[in-house]
Image (cartoon, rainbow, N blue to C red; front, side):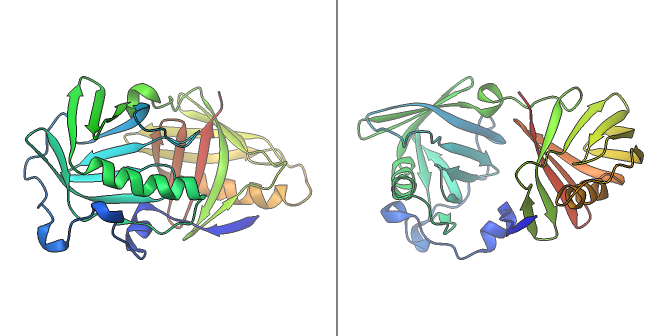
Length: 262
């Protein structure tokens, strides 16, 4: 299994951070976080659905998340974040931190464009639709839960995309498929080689797995290694989170990232 360094939001914030383009204000002129973020924005994420006056890179999407006076942004490459205020109907940002991933040049340029565009853009919210306008450009975004709603845990076939071990994440080898399907109080397991099932009690943000009864076929590598890594996560109490079509299972020192099958 190929292992790659995992870049979580926490680790990304801890990496070398750079100010975003010419839109960043100096630290001394950065606005303080709003003491009372607009409740209609706070805790919400919006995804771009249209842009007039400026063309986004084909296949890319702008993502804006508002939380407790902080704006997090992604336009297809690096992640950016910093304090924001809304002043006289305009979105005002201070110095924005940014990760330093290398992407294709059009996406790198789009990072710089979005950081410059949002600072000082007029902002309006109409229900689930957020509109930013500045210098003849209008960017329309819609609440993520409307554009790409969370898939249900139960009844969805969740296919393993990555296996997390400590601070690394390994993508599954080509040709090896592992999946989980949850029903009321139970889970069907396809861990890469064998088949199995067991109890899975969902409560709040956790799933408590009972013993998993498995068939005992012997398969060639790397299927057996994938199976061992997947089943190691499915024991005892495991935290879970669903965002759109992604399910994340997190246990102590290990986890799984799964995608919902259409």
